[in-house]
Amino acid sequence: MIFSSIYSCDTFAEYPEVIKKVIEYLKENDFVNMEPGVYEIQGKDIYAQVFDAETGAVSEKKPESHKDYLDIQYLASGEEKLGFTMLKEEYEIEEYIKERDLIFYKNIENEGFITAVPGCFSVFFPCDVHRPAVAVHEPMTIRKVVVKVKATLI
Image (tube, rainbow, N blue to C red; front, top):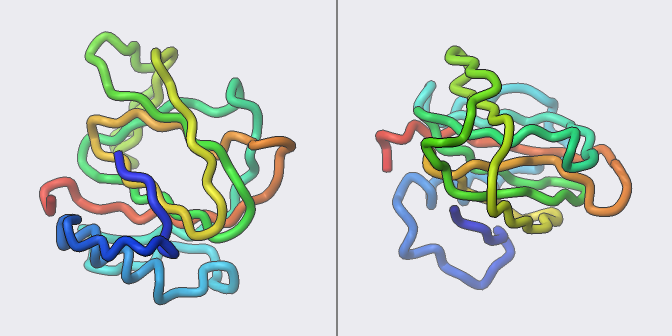
């Protein structure tokens, strides 16, 4: 997992080329004023999903992971907490939606949380379980961008 901000003084020089490409995409677009939808960056290998979401209690948000894609989650407006932990084979799958490359888990262990504000991005690899859109204080509407990156590009 990687957590940073597009406003960081980091040059991101050590990052894989595909992640640097996504960071540049995040820097170049005004997602607050962009229409919600799916935007292809490099066909189905790299694409962005722009949407509004409601944050809520941790108990309302399911932990998830993906097999075939990395999630690069970017916060355009609002604030949210994101849960994260490493994937373990013993985690019981609650639901697997193959066509969306989405796996939800019943319970996870050793979950940490980070707080994202506008400009923050998180890179979740297939070995990372994450729980997005957890309210920091009170529930709110946030504008998110999730860039899906085919794992084979890393």
